[in-house]
Amino acid sequence: MKQSESSKPRSAVSHEHEGEDSEDAAAAVISALLQRSSASLDRIVELDATLRQLRDLCDPARVPAQELASVCSSGSAEDFERLKNRCLAVIEADVSEKLEHDQSDPQKNQRLSDSAITLPDLAAFEAGFQVNVDHLSDLDHQLFLTRLQQARRAKLPVHARLQGVRIAARYPHDAARLPCHAVNSLTPLTGVGASIVGNAVFSSSPARDYHLPVDEGDVVINGCSIAECRGTVEELIEAINRERQQTRVDAAQLADGSLVLNSVDGVAIKLEVHSQAASLVSGFRMGSVFVPARSCGVIAWIAEQASELVFDSSATSLALNGLSEDHISLKRFSIVDLTFENATLAQISMAVIDRLCRALQAQYRHLVTQLDVLVEKYATDTDAGKRLRQWLDSLQGSLQLQTG
Image (cartoon, rainbow, N blue to C red):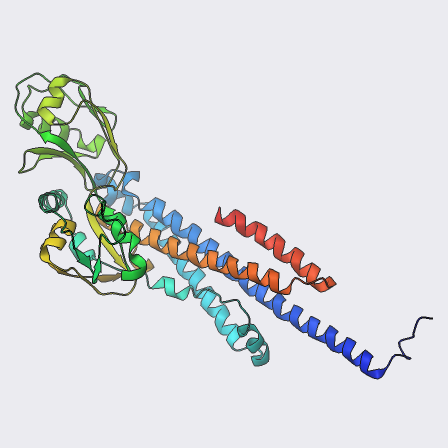
C-alpha cells in the first residue's frame, strides 16, 4: 500500500524539501550566472564587430593616400567617430551593469562569486596599448625609405634580446628573416607584439644601366603597365613613380644598388617582369612576385603595459627599427586615439584594433570554456538539470557559430 504524505516520517519530508530547496537555490544561481554570461558574450560580440568596422574604415588600401584628407573631412569621418563612440558605449554599459550587480543582494552576489564563472572586464579594453607612435607618426616616403635601408644593411645579432628575452628563442632559424613572427611568438613572456607598417619588395640583384629598351608592359605593378624607357635605372624609376597614384607604389635605388618598390600605405605589391631587358635593368627576376599588404616595412611595437622597449644593443634596434637607439619610448594609444588622418596612423590604428580583437576573442573562448564546465557540473538527471542542459546546449550552439 502506498504511504500517504501525512504518514511519512517528519524527517523524510524535511529532507525532501531540503533537497528541493537546495536544487531551487542552485538553479537560481545558475540562471543568474547564465544571464550575466550571456550579456557579457553579447557585448564582446558587439564590441568585436564594431572594432572590425573601424578597421575597415581606416585601412589605407581603401583609398589613395592623396585622398585621405578629403575622406577625413567627409561622411567617413563621421562614421568613424560614431563607431568609436559605440565601442565606448558598449564598454560603459558593461561597467554599469557590474556596478548594479555589486549593489544588489550581497548574499546572492556571494553565491555568484563562489561559482566557476569569471566575467571579462571590458573596461580594460578602453585603455588600448602602448605603441611607438612618436617614431612612426611622421613617417613619410623618404623617412620610410631611410629606415628600410638602415635596417636592411644591419643584421640581427644571433643573441638579440627584447625585454631581456632572446628573440630567436622559439624560431632560431627564422628570427632574422621573420622578426615579427619571432617577436609575436614571445608575447606571453615579453608583453610586446609587433606589426608591420608600410610594405616593400627588394630586387635580388643590383639594378644597372644596360641601355636596353624596356617596352611598355614589360614591367607591370599592381596591374598598371609601366611606360617604356631607354634602359637606365633612373628612367625606369621615373616611369614607375609617374604611376604612383594608381599603383600606390614608389621606386628607389638603395646604396647597395638594389631597387626597392615601396609603399608607405602598406598596400599589397604585385610585380610582373616580362622581358629580359626589364629584368637586367631592374634587378628583379623575370616572372611575377607578390608581397601581401604590410608584410615588409617598419615595425609598430605594441605592448600591454610597458612604457619602454629595451633591446640588448643598438645593433639589435638597428636591424629591427632602422634606428640605433637601444631604448624606445612607447605611448598610450587607446580607442579614443584611433584615426585614419594619415596612412601611418591608420595602420597603427589597424594594428591596435587587431590586438583588441585578439584579446576579445581570448576572453570569449575563456568564457565559453567556463560554460562548458558549468554544463558538466550542474546538468544532473533532475528535471531542472535537464532544462539547464537544454538551455546551455542551445547557448553553446550559438557561441560556436560566433567563434567560427
